[in-house]
Image (cartoon, rainbow, N blue to C red):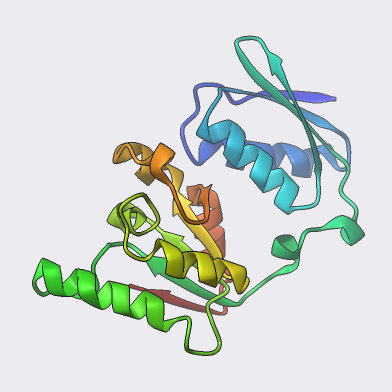
Length: 193
């Protein structure tokens, strides 16, 4: 079993390092040493999204994830999904005008997505866009409804940490720059707001 140490690495290096190790392991298990927090969550989510088994334990002042086995038939729907419609939301406002108007336009845009077809497959929230997915946002309910329709709602972990909003996430889940970049490059249609 290959062992890799991803402790003290910042996003997106743990995911990229694990991806490379999994490719080199060619079906053999990989043990990954990680700090608690975003890197552990991101690596576990990344491996699981590709159909790998992930076993977690505490180890050496952090965590150890043992990643094993990937069979084509066990891949998750997210791993199977290629292309699709991706929205990259980099601000809590829409447009460059007055802040109040920009926030109103963004709120109206997101709630209108519930009434149009097709809906996006994935919505990526980065920079101040994460304020839309966290406590105090007026569109949490709309994002929840979009999630129930199958729209994947993902907020940048580095951005949540930068604005000290990780514990205030109320819609969707946390993601990393690797997944954001991969989503944008594999998206059949990518729209940046």
